[in-house]
Length: 364
Ligand code: NAD
Ligand code: TYD
Figure (cartoon, rainbow, N blue to C red):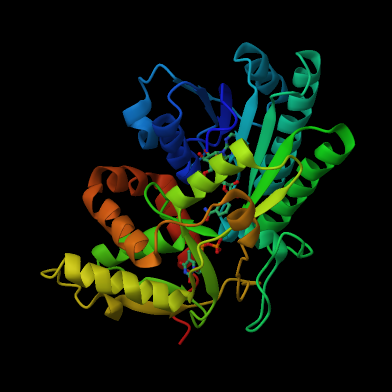
């Protein structure tokens, strides 16, 4: 996988879930590149995720907002950025339903800022040769499938349903337009649901693990039969790096785990692992904590992603099966109590839990 040497990489949103895993992955595999992590540290950004690399001479952290055009431009110039890996986003569907405005700012305007700065700074400094802008996106841009519908391919028309998905779809279109109009060297990945270490516990899998451990209800939206495709985060990081190094400019690559299961099955599997890991817990069997609650408005029924293109063109496929990935994730949350207490102890976390769940109550 060593085709293109990486030099000065700007990782946006590197303090979040996937971005922090990506920085660890990058520093493990490419010792000679300089990594600049630019993150505004919203509720979802947590520098503890990067504690073990904070003194690495190849790593720099900058607390900055991708909506601040002038400051962002200075970073491109000062750090001679030649590669951008763009993760920074508002990423939670439920928050986009509660408060869509910040999704428009960060996901759309922030992405435009990065593209426009890359275009102007790179044009004025040697042109686009050797430069690369990689945009990290989601399968949710394709909308939802019913049972029997074929999986999303890279040519499936966009049909986003939530404000989150619509803001990501919009950013994908702008990235694509910068390639077609200006020849900006871009690639895009559209990936399914990730899980693994460092995921903020507003998302299904970490929320279920943490609630189960402390004997709280496990909230299942609607009937729990909605289907997602699940990918272990390290596999996603590997796919992104492969696309940056070997992908064709201007192309989109779908990334998936090949693990499509209803939410209720994932939750029951987590409960079964916890029963084994914590046999003396008063909450065994953890499954008894499952509580069906009011559904998410506009809840997409099913996602399924066809990742044949990246498999055949770039020889990438997931290494972790769901069982291994879930066990390792459960173990990570069980052995990182400090991380959990620090994240969940913040008022902003409790506020979200109260806002999102207090009115949901039991649905059946
Ligand atoms: P996350 O919410 O855990 O992290 C987002 C990070 O971006 C945080 O560190 C936050 O502080 C930072 N950020 C937010 N707004 C910013 C701004 N205006 N300026 C600078 N930094 C800002 O998200 P994640 O789950 O790690 O997702 C990362 C990317 O991957 C997103 O673009 C998301 O759309 C995409 N994605 C996520 C998944 C998934 O399952 N989590 C799946 C496919 C694609
Ligand atoms: P989530 O982790 O929020 O990811 P996304 O909405 O991006 O797919 O949710 C995954 C699935 O789990 C989704 O179908 C919604 C469902 N879900 C619940 O049933 N209960 C919850 O408390 C949460 C957060 C999600």
